[in-house]
Length: 68
Image (cartoon, rainbow, N blue to C red):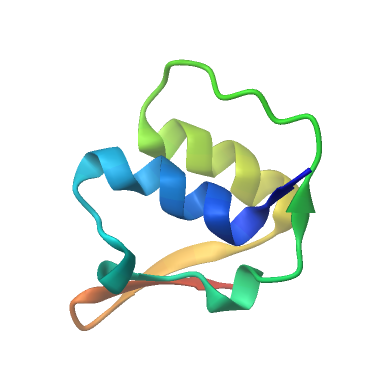
């Protein structure tokens, strides 16, 4: 199992979005089972997770925020 907040942070990191630029605190406590990351865009990977774990990512100032 992988913590959802860590997985989301890992997915956006290659896009140049650092830990100080994304707030995933509302995702703490949720765990992902059986997720295998296939080569795809960050948006594609996040869309799959959003459909299952029912969260959205919104821009708040200069920060992206994961909202449940």
